[in-house]
Image (cartoon, rainbow, N blue to C red):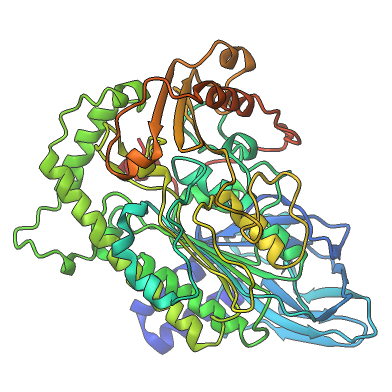
Length: 621
């Protein structure tokens, strides 16, 4: 592909000048010197595809991810089960060193000439219509060109042969039966207490949407919380508790836990994901079975420049939907995560009225809460509520946080308005949720560290499809999302799921459990009969503690009355009548056996985007 790439750069230079090459053509130039594709890991095939070749997750340019097959110097052959399917969408990606690509079935041939009209890396979708009489379609992809072609002036190789050649991305089947579009939107750092700032979203969704008053997330921070969302399991089960904090936590989501995208792709959905946090990349299992996945990562400077934020992310997803609607208006799934309300909290600067704006204040605040938390974020140190964080500074950061949420709400409501404009809204299942809340020292805890309600009671709103005959209960857990989606499309809920379909759930479903797995402590919160308990044990990180540690009893037991908490009374209860029941439930839960984890194959490396400096900027180190 070196010649085509070089021609593309020259063409861009001729049409738009050097600045356009610098701004838009960087990936073309870099591709001449080195193949930007990185193979991440093998992934499972959907149930409707058969092939002797492996599917792999690839990354290029640190932003785009895809699942594809590659075979240098050989044709790619797939057999696709097309029972109750009327079309196949086939993406061709890469095509380094190829002059053309041909997609063939028994009834059609599509030839794609590779020239400088295509950006690099190439990503072209071709739609193959399927005859009603065909229960399966053999699909062959062949290419012309040499995989040994050198780079610029023959001096720099493009890459080794195992990473070159035509790649066929994960095809998408279009089922004859129309299933509802599904949108899962996660807004980082979004406590229920900010529901007034989120009124634009509530207004846009209208009367058919519900705002549960007692939602819960199943983990205390972004990585395990999202893994619980997409698998319907608790952190100790899916196993993804973070990455790079301590030895042993290099593993991704348990590969034997079905994710939402895997469930939906198996059932004919075309799945897309866009995230703004490096802990949610495919390296950790979030891209499994997704047809496209994009990392629009917010770095520390983006809170000032707004180069990457919820506005840009939502515009990108709108572009995807516009493209997808050319082929289908059903059986579509989009997962989107936006990061704007996270520390350093700053909204767009024009929203701040302070004429003497001091942009060093978030850093001052971080220094103070880092001291309050200690180097390891020790639970007992925070529990004692003995710190010297300036209350006025914390209040100012909380004000910034609210303004950032207001900005994000406006962007998400713009997205809802767009769905209405393209007639996707009525039939859609829309879930908008926080992954966790945020604490500003209310009980000695800062950022997102505790299992108190300010952190694990996120804002959430859910709109069922217009044809749905169910209502949203007040008590919704994020582990309920996958079972709800499975129920809505008429398939079995995976056996491993701990959540319940909202279609059949009631507000009496108890107990409710959230766990916090960190290198220094293990905490588990249990809610039953209006009482909330938090038990603290020694750590078994990255797993739950051993049975011996649990049997020795908790180091600390806290009890709270949920009704009192709603009134702002956070006083601990001495010994509620169901204390022993709560502790028994916690013990039984913590000692649950995790089945199906193959430790030898479950590992991940830190993404190249995730530098130690970036983690420090965001308050993680």
